[in-house]
Length: 423
Image 1 (tube, rainbow, N blue to C red):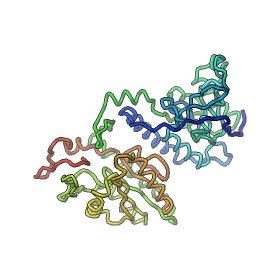
Image 2 (image 1 turned 180 degrees about the vertical axis):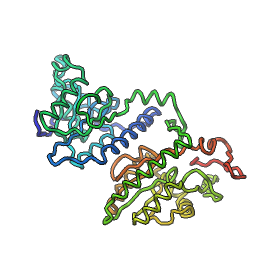
Image 3 (image 1 turned 120 degrees about the vertical axis):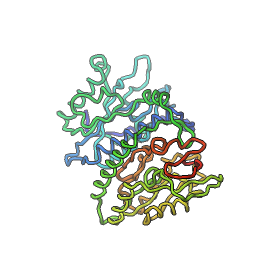
Image 4 (image 1 turned 45 degrees about the vertical axis):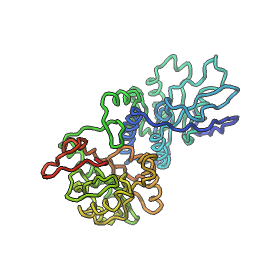
């Protein structure tokens, strides 16, 4: 087993044009949400870990359905080798983003897969080990210390969880690696010696079953899963997250131009309406909303510590820009650098999580982004996040009744307010 990686330079490769991505299904959206939550959890566990001076602090990744999506063949799948076609797969983007962050922080990466090293005798192509290296290279996983596949003899003698435990023991005791975490989609592979933190990638089939058994309508008309919290559970989780954020942000370097990015709906602003409205082009009106007190309190502490604040929201700029600014200032958010709202031309054709990531990357050239605070898991993935801090989802129905009904009555208010596109 070598400690030095020699990158495979693909030769004799014929690439087909990349396939155009299709509209995601309800099941795929649900799986992506569960995956996003797992990555937020992983970042939280690994945030305080620092690579040791000996350069042997390692993170172990499985391959199939952990970093590569076996349900998604790549648009570059037809790679010719000795006249045969080899199936390649697309990377799982949120896991790839975590991988890049770990590389940048100085961790060593080990890929440990139950793929069998040699292909079947009936398939006269190069061995699976070389094919796997090439798939990793083409999908961006090109920096790592070790790539280990099972041999045929090992596959007949051991089950994958037993073999993976043996390999971890070997890496730790014979090669001196300090295994910080193991990331795998199979729970049985996360048991045994030398796993470090055990981080499970959600299994796709479970997410599909969840989507079918627990559908909910979102504001864009798709069905997806939303966690259902009682008001007490929401308050407890919110207080815990705000205290956690406050403790993290106290450690920021005061000599830098520090920035905290805040979402608006469900983060800076709650769902208690005020007696003011933003007129919409459709003829409807969106009410102003009260601030969430815990978030407003954290915001005031950040202003005192001379943090810069930017609000990054999915609200449409052309409809809600000026009204949103007035709403924020009216409830106490009086100091901030800017509000960045979604351009109308991108709203229907660009996922909000990708747009927000692009905005953060642009901001990172001017600011030191210390934290991003949002209530949607997929908005806390990607580059230039700082600390990703997810607040609990503020469930409309539990606190104020049914927002989706044709008309709804706000407790404590005398008049009925029509629902808006953001209800």
